[in-house]
Amino acid sequence: QVQLVESGGGLVQAGGSLRLSCAVSGRSFSSLTMAWFRQAPGKEREFAAALSRSGYSTYYGDSAKGRFTISRDNAKNTVYLQMNSLKPEDTAVYYCAASNFGGSYYGRGAYEYWGQGTQVTVSS
Image (cartoon, rainbow, N blue to C red; front, side):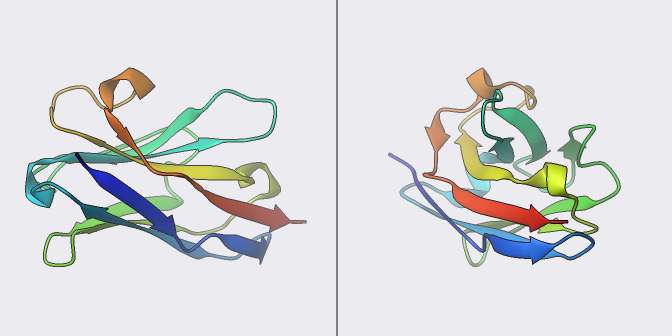
């Protein structure tokens, strides 16, 4: 079983930055595809970013492209989401997700494991 624990959320002004972290335990971290999703109040959970098991390939949702960067540190069993130029519409609960499989990155159904989420609030 894989456990995911997110941290790093908080309140930030528009234009600011945050870095989210997701600590992974319970399985070899390097064998997992990792991703971040987000869910705003009253909306569906949407894909933000994903990172292949090798770490060489990254994938971004339209809202994240050019502003967010996903990365992983295999030595620390941690995946990060660096978020820059934040906007009020980025306000959401951000979830870390993991999969034992590769090749499918964008859909919620591709991930077997989920964290509890961390709140990000961007004020205008």
